[in-house]
Figure 1 (spheres, rainbow, N blue to C red):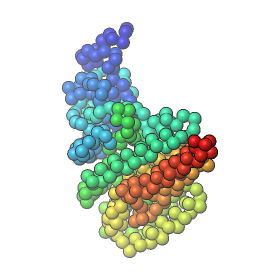
Figure 2: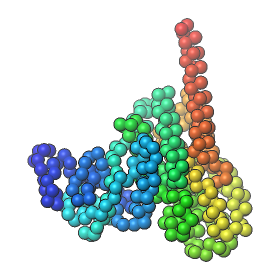
Figure 3: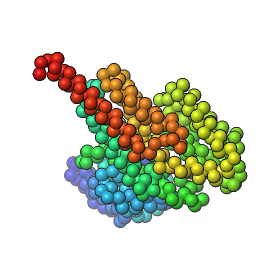
Figure 4: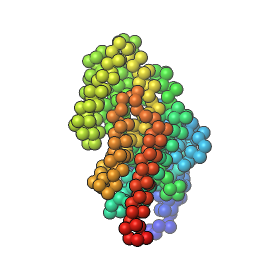
Amino acid sequence: MSDTSTLLYGGIKISNATKIKLLNQGTFGCVFRPNIGCDNKIGNTAFISKVQREKSVSNRESEISEKIKKIKHYNDYFAPILNTCKISLAKISDNEIKKCDFIKKKAPMFANKMRYVGNKTLMKYLESILEEKPSTKFFSKFFDCYLHLLTAIQLLIKQNIVHNDIKENNILFDEKRQSPILIDYGLSYDIDALSTTKYIESAFYVYGYDYAYWSFETAMISFIINKVGVNWNEKISADVIQQVIQDFIGENPIFQEIIDKNETKDFEHSLTNYMKSFHDKTYQETMDELLRYAPTYDTYSLAITFLYCIYDLKLHKHIEQFPHIAHMIHFYKSIILAMPNKRIDSIEAETQFNRIIYNFDDAIEKKRIGGNLLHGK
């Protein structure tokens, strides 16, 4: 059968060229391309569908998407849900849909339509331009990606949104726009809405002490939500605080993979001292105080993401040729290891990172001039 021949899927004629494919699946759903329309027909390859059960997390993603769509030129930074409708996958007889593990029954599902950005994650993009070793051109694009994503975080904060799941594979490089796009708002939340018990319980749905991209504040808040129960007016104990500190430092991958032992020891000491000020606070007061720093949570996640990129791409092995790599490592670690009340936000991160870029450009220019003088140019 040729690629132009037709097949029947749920009584719908489509060509093999537009046969639906499972792109990805996660905790909360599966992503298909082309999208699945509200009429259960196969849609356009320019769009994808994230198929989910009806859950508060999927409802929240739709609400966050509506806020994102109010941002001017949002397509330059985000790929939000364009529309949501109930579908019945039983009407589409396709093997790709069966590959989605959580679809077991012929129960109604919800399809979230989004534009298709591409399949090149941040790491794949950086690998594609790295070649055999880093160059000034590579670092220029590396800088651009980080600054572009800082702008994306700033735009979210203006809408009181925390993405809450910034990591390498939630950043796709848009070849058309030549820029990284933040995707997947399944764990995102509206800071203002955290004042309601139901919403904060949904946002901090699991004790997240061992997720590399979540800060200590998220670990502490999620412990209270999931382990303490509703007695939030009780005083928090020193033992509880110490337990969360030990869980966070002992089980979080960043302290085994990218933060050295001396840095970890210093961080634990500083964090223990910082949290002493909470010994007379209630659980509610503790959460309220730590949520004051929610606008920096994504800055923290992005620092971890780019620090992982530096080490995974082995850029740290080229510090002798490019000394600014050491400055970048120090910069990202300073964000990660800062106490919550001392962590810089995305605006200050942009200012400080631009200094690194300026010094890098200045060093490259001096090196170029020196080379020209050496060769009599």
